Length: 255
Image 1 (cartoon, rainbow, N blue to C red):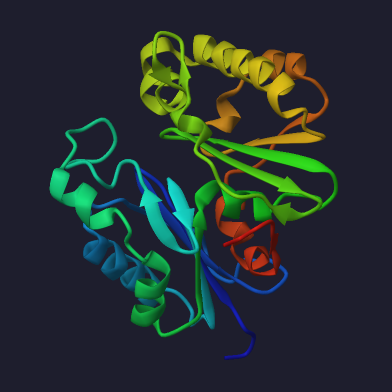
Image 2 (image 1 turned 135 degrees about the vertical axis):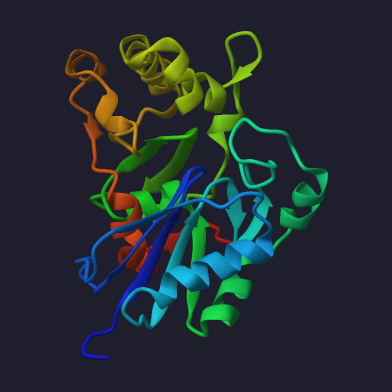
């Protein structure tokens, strides 16, 4: 291997995006994207990651960003993958049971035979964009909402902001997600994003808020301008590009 590379896979509800990166975060292969297969058992998930890796240049380590709550590489709770056909489809009790407590990090490491890091996808996204100073918050907009906090470059313990209720007992994940964007239309959805940011600001008092994910580019300039200069739109490619830098993250109370 001419240069040590990191396999980075950004796992979403609709697509699995991947590339290999050097230690500086430069991609050494074209970004790849395949549909997320359903129904998706943990075993199929690991096999799919292995298949992705086989199509890319050899890597000496892997970073996997997954939706949901991940602690020390273990799935505590995960959306989409526990549904029969993915986002907004019927919940499968057997899949829910199979994913609960699944040690994704150990399983993928054993399959690929390389060191593996499994984090929440917004955390990997943030690893690629934060400055490492102050209180930095990352939100990703896609199938649902991803969320991560960094302080002084250290990753804070993860919590699922997306599961908080808003407006008539609807979760933020559903209120701001892709299904609702399609129902409302992009103009009204963009206003809703601005409203969400206005309501979150007094809660978190961030130094900088980054908004990424596939739908971030759909926020209208007029709404972005009203959010303030401390709110920045970042490219969706950060979800993959953060894979190398994620290995250098420090953590607050990781265990």
